[in-house]
Image (cartoon, rainbow, N blue to C red; front, side, top):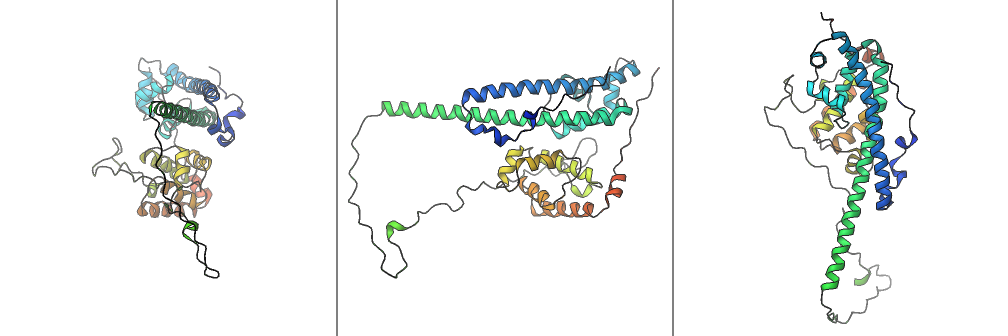
Length: 331
């Protein structure tokens, strides 16, 4: 099969969500926009599926066995059900899904792995942005629906309620003027009391702790990702993505809200889709805090970041090389 190339980037896929003014869209406009986004999701998934299928088919032709997909899954350390799910397009973009795609592409037809992974990464990033945009439009439609239901309910209560005469309020007291040179205002000039924290976002929810004996099924490592185990900047970036999933996999918009918009959602997205660790420690700190990290978590992440940031780039790159395994010939 010929090499699958990504179609030219559609500028609509990368435009800033703020410019879309989703919060001002009417219901009809939001539905039309969402249909367009869902069509592009299907198209992008199909392009990525062709790329994966071409690589898998190449190895199946070499193996010429009845259980070729099982062999590929075993050598790539990917559950066979995940391989079939990727081939059928029955998935949503996430760090674990991308790790499986990358493992399969590195294994199948390894001589062209780098080009295929680069193309697949572009398609996968586009797919993740489209899914995020689809969720924002769905939230807009739910908000409009709730607002319409609330207006209908209030109108019904107004029509069925009996008219009544309001009670006469007591005579209003004349406002007292401040004495000249006193520097104090009268009762009517006082600031209304209220919650000083009104308008600020609530703190990130505390992360539910794991059971003491909880561990990953194959490696028997603890579920909580540990940045101190990362020996390269690429491993540090992988650990950040795993930490986000472990903390509940909140959306980029939710991370922006939890950080009180000090870090934009696009910065969080770039951090969590990059192949290397962030260049700034305060970005890592903001991410850990937004994910509900404790003081001990902040210390571990900061220590791991400093240790890798002080390593020369060449040494760090050499230590992160991958070993590509070719499937054995059978027969």
